[in-house]
Structures are given as C-alpha cells and as structure tokens.
Amino acid sequence: MSNLHSDKGTEEVTGHGQRMIHPLPCLFTTASLLSGFYAIISAINGNFFHAAVAIIVAGIFDGLDGRVARLTKTTTIFGMEYDSLSDLVSYGVAPPLLAYLLDFEPYGRYGWLAAFLYVATTALRLARFNSLTLEKSPKDFVGLPCPAAAGMIATTVLFSRYLGATETVKHVSILLLVYILSYLMVSNIRYMSFKHPAAKGKKTFQVTVAMVLLLILVAAEPPVTLFVIGFVYVLSGPFSASYRTLHKAEKGIEEQEDTI
Image 1 (tube, one colour):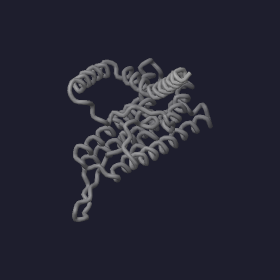
Image 2 (cartoon, rainbow, N blue to C red):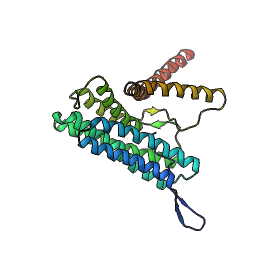
Image 3 (cartoon, rainbow, N blue to C red):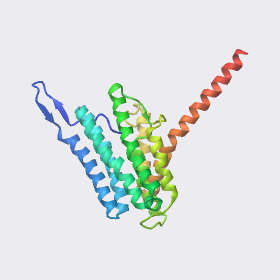
Image 4 (cartoon, rainbow, N blue to C red):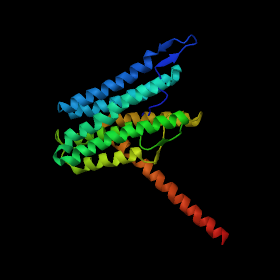
C-alpha cells in the first residue's frame, strides 16, 4: 500500500524554475488507477472474479510506484496527491462497489450505507495519512492501510469462488467484513509497514528466503494463500494492540507490587 501512498513523485522543480515530469513513477500510478477503473467496469458488468483480480493488480502497481519514485529520487507532494486520488478510486470505490453488486443489494438501505461508509472511511484514511506524512515519516501505519482493506475484500471474493460459490454471494459475513474494515481504517490501531528496508547481513538473507517460500505458496493456491495473508495482516493490528495493552497492565501491576 502497498501505502504505500507516500514518497511517490512524478514531478520535480529544476534550478531554472522549470517543471519536469518524471514519467516512470507516474506510469505505475496510472496503471494502478487503470486497474481500479477496470475493476469498477468489471463489477458493473457482473465479472466479479475479474474485478477482484484487478483490485489486487492495482495494489501491485501501487506498491511499485513508490519504490520507483524513491529509487529515482523523484518523490514530491504532487506524486503523493496523485497517488491518493488514484487510491481513492482503486481502493475506496472499486471494492465497496464490488461488494455491493455481489452481496449488498438484498439488504437495501443497510447495503448501500455500508458501501458508502467504506468510501468515506477510505477518503478519511488517505487524508489522515497524507497529513501525518507531511509532519513526519511514521514507521508504522496508523489504522489499517486501504490497500490491505481492499485486498481483503478482493481475496474474500476469490476465496469464496475457490470454495465453489456462484457469481453472487448472499452472506451477511461480507457485509460485516466491510463494516469492520471501515472501522479499522480510521482507528488508531497500528499496523506494520514494509516500506523500511530490512537490516543487513543474515536478516536480509532470511527475509529473501521467506519471500521465496511465500511466492511458492502463493503460486500453489493463490486464492487460499492471498486470503490467509490478508486475514492475518488485518488481525495483526488488533492482536498487537491487545498485547501491548496487556503488557502495560502487567507492568503496572508489577510496579505497584514493588512499591508495596
């Protein structure tokens, strides 16, 4: 995201005051936007499988544009804003529209309100992320990154198809999932960020081996593996927050016992 939203530039101001557009990061951002738009068109046409895959592809391009911008040293506020607008389409509109057309219509008002809530919380999530990035570069994400939330919806659709579901899935679990993801995006729960490089030496080698094994697992059963990865990441935030709360409580009790 993968956010996955910052450090993505397509513009640079030269010493002579002339603006120079850097096409490579812009190309990846546009590819992400195109994938999100294609997901919307596919969902409207009833091609829900293609829409889910397009959302995942948008996430891949979204992760690449930031890394390309950092490598080419073309990170600007323009790139961050363009990327956020692209993310709002790919992760804020395409996933809830997919969920609505696939599952929410029978719920009437509660269905379209759930879809709108997701759109609104994604916009709020992006606005908060951009404001925090301008102040400082956070090591962790505050709230669930919207690419992860969109990926959770997309992989749920793929996983349901893997289990033999038909083109339309009438189940309240997807409706509840959208409400939960909407809350997590605007919550203060922290999620791990993978933007920072790993430590050198043995840890780098271990990370490389882990990535190879993960790639093999994804290639073996993509719908299952991607769903599990997304589900574990979504749960990692609440579990980490609960662990920190319990750890602080235990530490406070120990300090009180020491003072007695």
